[in-house]
Length: 308
Image: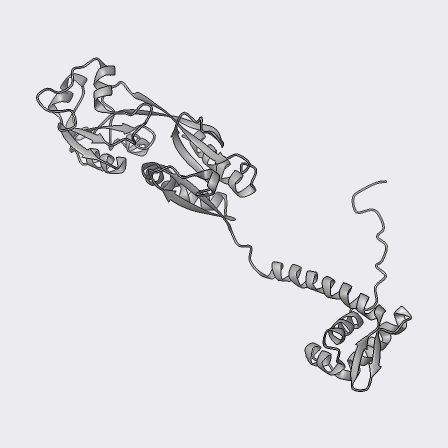
């Protein structure tokens, strides 16, 4: 019958641990008296343990000189091996005594996604991954993952970034959103309301701007003033969401970042169209995707995105 644990283990052929400890301390100090102080025993006890070890091994380990000890060649070899073994044993025990330090993973993403999507889920992350310290770097400036600026990123765009491994999280669409207190029902009534604008990073492939929305909706833009002047303007989408919640106008907002307000009815989407701006992607520097802590964060974010 071959079962795990059924084999008979051969006993280790080791001298008593007390003798080994006594010898290692005496060899380190070249003194029975100082070894006795280290181990809190008497010098005669150290001498007795060393003698017993020498009898067990059948060879002398010390040359006993006048008021001095010197190691024999056999004693030097044994001392080197014991010192390394006791150092490893001490380090292993100390690791068990100390609580495991959490592994730190830095996630970088833009300020709106950090505030509206990541932060509300931080408590869930700590519960799901208690051994990982998630550090959030919120910035609208792209961080160089290859140079270690962060461990993992959530970015919007095409997902085609040289040197990075990416995975699509969810498509991103923008639509006109407003407070239900405005009573807005038809796109034809939009020119009667203030437009709320958000700045987009230069070079964005498909920014959700009002001129584009009017064009895709087949409607004429407001006349008499420039499109940007016709309403409020914010550099941070979070502020635009707050302005829409307060009833200050109609904003082109992310259906992902405003999902909670849409579910609660604090914001409504009175009509379309919704503009396609690409997708959100997870990204990590090539070669780092196998790191266990990074992988855990990657899988957790992907699971949260899948839940919607």
